[in-house]
Amino acid sequence: MQRLKGKTTIVTGAGQGIGEAIARRFATEGAHVVIAELNEDKGRDAAEQIASETGAETLFVKTDISKTQSVTAMHAAVLERFGPVDVLVNNAGIAVFRSPLETSDDDWDLCMNVDLKGAWTCTKTVLPDMLAKQNGAVINIISNHAFSIIKGTFPYPVAKHGLLGLTRSLALEYADKGIAINAISPGYTDTQIAENDFAATGDAAKARAKVEAMQPVGRLCRPDEIAAVAAMLASEEARFMIGENIVMDGGVTIRMYDDIRSGD
Image: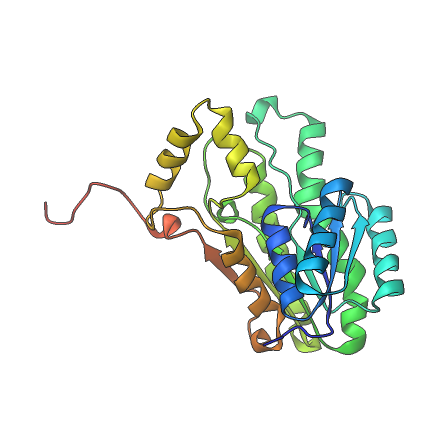
């Protein structure tokens, strides 16, 4: 089944990890896939590999979502190659973790410009395409940081809370225009970034085992699992879903306390 056949789709930050998995899934669903990625080597490689594996038409455009001019140029390249945009996935992001009083203006601006403003810039750039068709989908890849806080991760959760608010606000604004705007909030996901974090501890296997033990399902999320949900949200099957935030964290955020049993 090719639910996105002929659709023009943009996935930001799709050079690796979750974004790459979403781009690949969209390609298998028949979409034209645009890899909007800042890292030129990773973005180009992803576009070429996905095209080779799936036979889909892909396009890599080097894009810095924190800069309006870069997003505008990316959109112009998409229009020239594939035409108006049908689906946007705001996946690109950056983890800025600082002690609050040690957070500089540059730290704050970097986090907000990429994780929040960048998503808005991309969205407002493609919305006219969707409004002209009275049809479209925007999917924001957020995080369970959008509603839960881990100490020591400031100001990242601030941006993610804002992105959830952006999702819901825009969803209502454009629900009657045929545009479905929703979000996915992944938990700990098995990506290269996670592997690098594990390796940085000096004992990658031990670090992975510790994190896996914290997951109710006993493992990390796979990028292809997130991609499957993104494909559904991008399709016509999900047009009645408006402003939803689908949490994919293996049950972490619904759990209260370990080792406490009622009535003990």
